[in-house]
Length: 349
Ligand code: ADP
Ligand code: MG
Image (cartoon, rainbow, N blue to C red; front, side, top):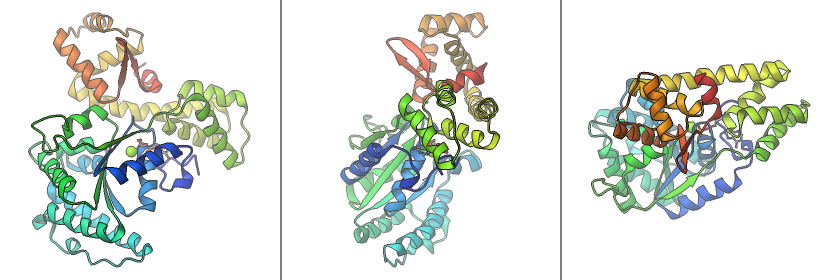
């Protein structure tokens, strides 16, 4: 069902995205390391799960691991790999492969990630290749006590010496993921190791409309062209919001009720994300609010903050804006800032 709110997990369930799917395939063939990038709710996890439903590999949700305790311990990661390993054995049996995975038997506290990667590389010898995917991998900077350095060293080792392994990292906070990996940074264990990058972008207007139409058609519900256009003009092309609207429309049966409900849920989700952001600095919210109100240039944002009693020294403001770009909240073009997700503006009001 197109209007199913969960991430999709098979290719047939995914609308459009053939190009991105092929790019992902090509990148994984070519590079030991692939990054799958794009803002929240654009469809990265769906694409990745669909790919993994057709190829041997395992998927680790880093946000979930992080959320359990505010950091990621080796033991937690090992345990997660083990539980995914058990599921994977089942998947691989579809490929008529019987595996005897030693790492499933090991006590997590004593397990070595290198050993696990080596073993998965052996699986890859039999299956052609084996994919280890980390969803929302920017959270891996909370791994261990050294900002995730040990993991980067492990990835570098896999890159250089485990030819049948493929590592895929997704990231909603693109700049943070790049910073974490430090591929262009001498100090990083991954320095110089080129990877593939696949971008998933919001749908354009036409595709968004076609998406809604396809979803309603599938559900056997008729919706006027006008309602479809109105929905897209509010929600834009982020598939997660379009799906939510579609599901609400099926539930409520009227445009206005569906839209109200959609915005309600969206605001709730965005509030949660904004309050996380606010914990890091309340100036972030001030800046986003300024941009939402049309104060979209550097000097206007500075003046707005000052007016709101959040006077910010110039270097600090530069840094905050840079971070907001890295986290995917804002975009900048020729010195003009805008919000990447139009619903953030509604949530800020
Ligand atoms: P991300 O991982 O980028 O945050 P998800 O894969 O979780 O995004 O997608 C967000 C929501 O949008 C999910 O409900 C998913 O079902 C839906 N979705 C995203 N892209 C598509 C698509 N191409 N076709 C159908 N549904 C999609
Ligand atoms: Mg996701």
